[in-house]
Image (tube, rainbow, N blue to C red; front, side, top):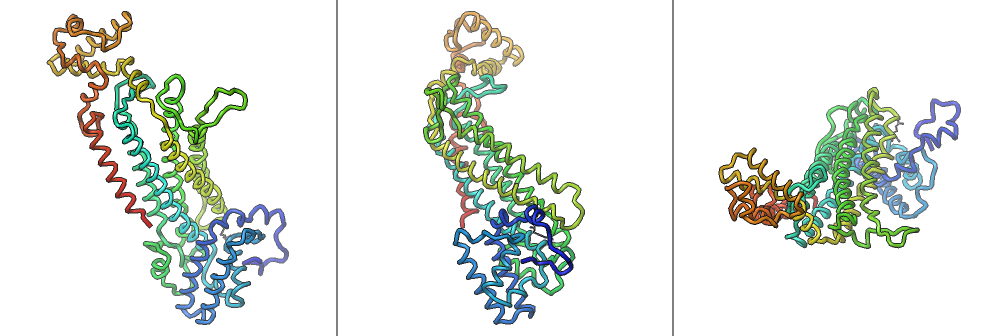
Length: 463
Ligand code: ARG
């Protein structure tokens, strides 16, 4: 069946039908298409196009095809797209009444409605997946509250931080990602139905009523825009891409931290693979795939941007290219959030080598210089002095904590017991006692706050 054949003398080539057909992927919009069509049928009744009897048949027809859709072979068909497919199925179940279902409606608006209905749900489910991931990070922070990590800049040991503080950094990224997804959801929450093909529908539909029935917060303000806008899809892809960038940074950190060279972490068996040749290997494949998939999701964002670039108003068939990329991005994104949560749940943490790396790494040098500055030594001079102590340590093979007060006083008379304490990374944590800093009591506060923020997020996405 075609929804258009009248003005043609012969049909499309089989090659073109295969080239242009979208049912194999837009079948994913089936439930949304039926929902949108039901609300539309209710409106057709209200404006007098459908009789009560026809309206009843149409709804019964939709009930029947929803039932049929449980059959695995249901979508094996060669209809052009999901909209044509649903209308044909409706004809088979509702009879002649189905011929009126498309009155005053265009597939251009229909595909936009379906895509938005689908996307709003997908986004909410992703937010819930992100909440589960954030909860796992917080649980891990609670599992090893005292573990001390040498924080890095330039991938060189820089200053000690609590591992919990490090985990909370990712919590912050994911909390912003959650908000970005929520904003993308708001952008999708606008009903195009009633826009017709491009100029607005030819019938006096109550668009607000349909919006209410379909759970949309608003109706679109311009019909040309409504049928050709896909920036709501870009918003979703952007939110997913940024989240995946954060996922991949975490994955990279953990690949590195779990290498033999670092030995801080150990991915669980549940997310590790072996080698077919080297029996000793235990590879962090899940984390590597997460890092890899970030590129794939970002690629879909770029692809849709390029599809939209330079498209004349209003609908063009190019727009059909929106779906496969978005669906694949959504699948990879959802799977990645779940896989990363599993990595977090099963990660082994080795606090001793972490702290040892911090102790060997002079991560307390800045704290020592600041301790001197507190005694009145100008910071530039304090920096020089501590730099000299580090150099002497390297030459003499000494660790930071090996220096006695008397030895330190030879570098600067201002050194006292308090300054000497800063030589131990754990004590130096106290040097960062500001909100957002890694002093243990501030981390404890941040952890409590993160838990209550997460509860709030969960409330907003509860079904
Ligand atoms: N499969 C089409 C799409 O995804 C549906 C709209 C078709 N409209 C049209 N005028 N050919 O965009």
